[in-house]
Length: 125
Length: 426
Image 1 (tube, chains in turn yellow, brown):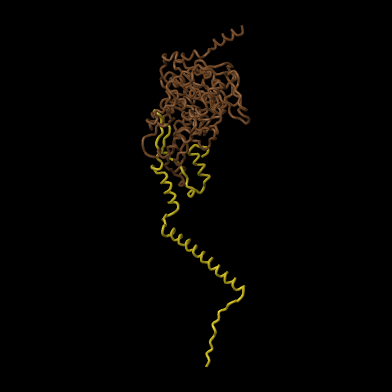
Image 2: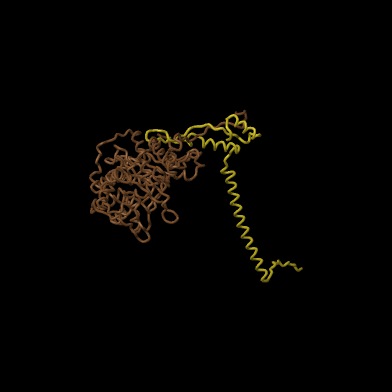
């Protein structure tokens, strides 16, 4: 009995055409590898920022509030007086109180601004 | 809260207030809403001011500052001028007692002001200051050991050099002695003095008294002088009477102080007590003898020469007038002037230097159409000095009478000149 062995065949395209396709395959592999590598880096950075270095703020508002408080703290705002040779005041930092409006909580801005102007006896802000 | 609205509420904030308003705004400068210094002392000492500690004291005296600004403002309005700058300095310490630049600005409206108002003419602006520079060329000449005070300069003809022609404003059209060149402010005579001193010597002398380099000062707003480069022989001639070289008023006052205080270089300073020793380095720029001669010459300008309207009796005022033409499109413009007066008093023992410069004054009836340093600068300085006398409670002195008389034999008075003319015509 003869064993029919199927000859394992590799298909080779033997022509000039063939070699150029092989070359193209090789090139696209390199391009894929580069992109994959870059994706890995970006992914790693995303994980780093969102999980490892994550800062927890409850909300954006809280964050903004903190920022305002920080810049308003006495230490950040302290400034010496400037005086002349006889001690006459030329410049001084004073605590003042300013009115502010939170736009999120105002539904009827026109009315509120009119009312505020009336209250403060002003014609414009 | 207000109107019972939940969206409105209050917040505590720090604000920088300037009780003197625009009076000292060029000096203090301003601080932005984020408490960062933007200009003046607020900017140059930003870090220092942020540290806790004693108030920062300036050398300024607000009362003198007010007097200076008031008189400058008055003169500016009178002559419809574009601007003015003034400095009062202690000649022995270099302390700036008052410094004003007009127009000035409201520190609360900093962002809205135009650039002319924000520009500090006294420290940042550099100008060709004209004949006040004769103080320096004359001092340089007196420093030359070979020079004799009685030597004469022929000021009968304008000097021609290349395309330049040097002429006299207050033309005397005669042969002048050194003191006469100075008190009649002869450009021709001064140019000849410059030639006699020599280019290298004059340049070195100007450098010694701090006219060539940007001065050290505690403000950011400090102007760099404009010095001829390359410096040719013609520049020596023009620099002798203050043209072709531009410096800031602060620089001029410091240099003059360094001569009249006895010859010791002072550095202008705005911060009180910061470094008292610094100014006692005692770097000599001119000899005792030259300093004394210069004091006499400055006094002569007021008692006999172009600066007579600066005199305040009992206070031995000395000084030098300056009238410079501003550079225009075609050379110098005879209509647009920088008129100034550099005053010092009392001349027998100088204490204060008072400088006032007016930018583009117009001639008026009261000054017979003139807008020169003698007509605009000198009377302003006189008024400032009168104010200083009452503010600082200065006592008049009689001891200085005849202080300048030893030079009088080199000066022909008006009567003498008239006599000579009469003899010649008869």
